[in-house]
Length: 119
Length: 107
Image (cartoon, rainbow over all chains, first blue to last red; front, side, top):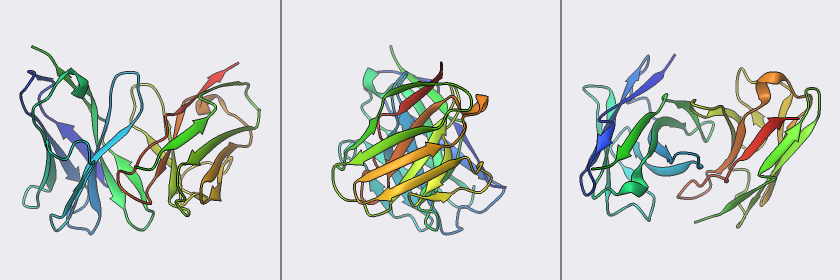
C-alpha cells in the first residue's frame, strides 16, 4: 500500500522560500505515475500547484510557474516542492498526491502539512 | 484555465436522504472529472474518477454521471459519515482545477 508523507518547516518568512518534501513508501516513485502538489489556504478550496513524472518532466500552474520548482530524488524515493518569494497568500496546508494515469485522478494523498508565512 | 462551478455551495440534509451535487465546467472536458470527499483536518479522498467510475473501496451509494460540461455526484442514501465537503476536479487540461466545494451538513 503506497503512502505519502509531507515534511518541512511549518513557518517561513515573507520573501523566503518554502521547501517541502514528500516521501513515498510502500512502492517505487519510478512506477510510472505523476506526483503532484496541491494546497489549501485555511477555510478555502483546493489549488493544484504542479506535477512531476518519474522521469523528471514537470508541469506547473501558470500563475505560480515563475516561483515553483518540483524535483524528484529516485534514490530517496521522494519528491520536493520549492516555492520562492512567498507572501502571506501562500499560507496553506500543502498536500502531495499521486496522479495515476490509469484512473486519471489523484488517488493517494499525504496527510498534509501546514505552512504559515509570517515574520 | 477551465473553471468548475459547483452547486449548491452548501447543502443541508438528513440521514437517509438522496442528494445530488452538480459541477459545471466552463469548457468541455469529456469525462475527465473526479470527485473527492474531504472531512475537517483530513486530506481529500478520491470517490469517483472518469466521471462515473467508483474508486475501489468506496460505498456503492456514491455514483457519478455526466460528460462534456455537466456532471453530478449522487449519494443515494446519506449515512452519518457522509457529512463532509465534496470537490469536483477536471483533469482534461492544466491547471487541473477544482470546484469551490459543496459542504454537506446535517439538517
